[in-house]
Image 1: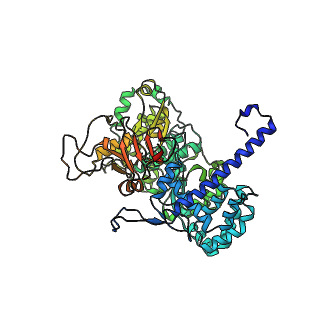
Image 2 (image 1 turned 90 degrees about the horizontal axis):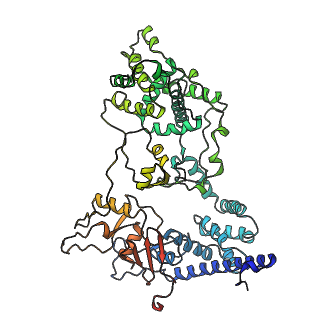
Image 3 (image 1 turned 180 degrees about the vertical axis):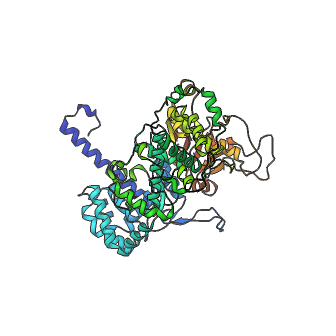
Length: 600
């Protein structure tokens, strides 16, 4: 009826057309669920041709929860490829369809009758996966009449209450497990080159960690950092990652707080001292910063000795207008993550993103107010051993450091920490990390452009310095991916693995969603022949390797999937039933239209 140009319809007919399109879409969604059920029924048994179950071969897996039949493990791969889903999304879709039919029959009947929207029914099925069959039946009875009549948010609340009613023991056990949960949760990178992380730990540990962050934020202010307290607290995370440098930063800041409380970003001392900059830097090389001051020198923060932690922290919290022991908002009690799991932005509850100003008043004293409790002269007066030449050495280093801009000051502190500070005698540097940065020669030449950092995403070129920080940087030679590096063995050397990941940064299976990491399998496109001749070119080389997740790797080895390298560098996949897909740097391209292989 509405095959003509929609612009020619009047407003009433246009609205009628939109409503009919929704009906068509919903009818297709129900039919897709029915297709998933029929497909699962045809893959409820795994046949082993050899009669022997070998490691890595296909197994039955239950995707829909208690009471649902098993499905052959490789079946979702082909279903997902033809419906343009990732393997994980296809497995979830099949599991939700099975859960509706076997665990929530009333809701499933409402879907078939057109009284319940398919996607809402799937959400309910997914939420109830952990329930027993009997508990799921209680939820089924409670919510069948309101699937379409309340908002999705209200429906989720009602389903949650019904789940607690259906299985109170499970709800209680879940609540207790969440209350005991501890961990550090890292969120995904955003479009601005930043990440979020949340800590759930003992209250005392969090208070002391928060106090250390404040200490470093105040130290940065003393060194001339003009940013706000929240911004400096965020910078403190990078310093905490390098304990020796953080210790040195605090010592220098305490000395400056006592001797030079007002330090602009470009210190006038460099112009009025009469000392050339070169001489100043030369003096810095002779400085040996003493690091034997007692831990009690921490200052007004809660990072003192264990004996006085309780009183000082309670006093600090009360002064800030917070009850003692009150820590930052923690992840929702309903959410417990595995060690290697991260939170997507749409999983983060609203109250996690409250600004620090909403949680506590701004506690950012001026440098004049940040006094170390113990002075070197006090040690001399009491007969306690003082640091030999400590003030003179710190003064020489401070004068050299303050002659430069803020970034140079911070870099000097890090360097000095490992040449003369706490880590001078260890001979060790912080753990080294390798960053793979992809950028063009134009970006390098102009100083502007977009680059890509592996496992982080796109960044602007001027954000790279923030990512690297004030640290020692080792620039490695560019890896020429055209260089022929190969071996004849089945085992893949690291130098070849690195080239494969750089060439293919994601799982190369159709609609593969995982980023290629050092932990991901690498598959020989042409299977390795252990008895084959070595030849002029080894069988294990970047042209014959692609990164694959373990399930996809097993499906190619045991599940009938085939792949070949295209002249363009992409991969052509052929599914067990003959459907073909091209996968390259632009994504997955089904060879359209999707028809029976015999009809092509």
